[in-house]
Length: 240
Image (cartoon, rainbow, N blue to C red; front, side, top):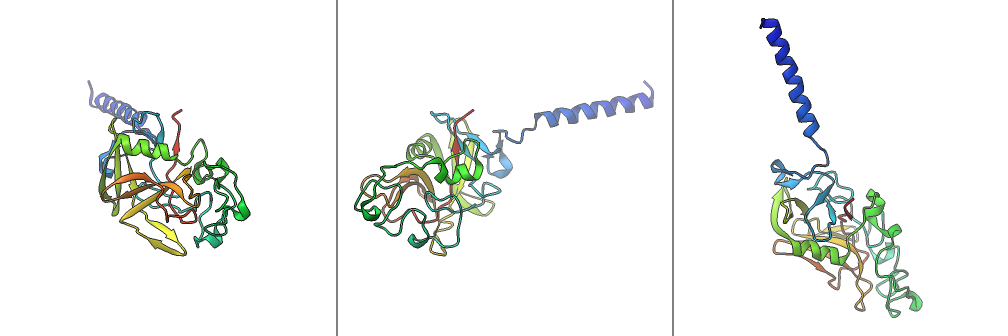
């Protein structure tokens, strides 16, 4: 084989090799990325949950998994600068709710509608991502917590919890805190993420949420975290 022939053969082999690498790369792959704390790549992550539900890899409005993204009052689909009863779309005060209310004492002029799950038009995840994206229900948050291991970690300077499914795939949920008035609270130590589920035990001015901190991750509807608070949102969708 002449020198020119050998060079030609080497060039062909190099092109084939590059083609193989390119074909194997998938921007929506579910393979772990050890360079990012083992967090699974792609917009949607299969955590091997019993329901088959997929969880988004980042918050609504965030460009990467470690970013906080946007904050929303419960039932609103746009972020804003002030979070209060005075700026809330579906309530004038603690006891004057105008939508999503199953308690006439807390409804405006006795208003009730018995809606206990966000309608799609009031879902920040659907508004942000579309294509089947929505906010998780309280049951789906419980499923996440019950079927994944979670650990408090720091990734790229952001603190939060890494959830790892039984299939080895992982997502990171940052401790983004919350907004009330025009100020931020608990960032770096706590995370609160809205569910689509209203609190129905007499306190419809609150809603269920995913709460994370250094010690635990849980679904909760603690009194005091009212619907007008600004929480980040993590989307879910059914597997296709």
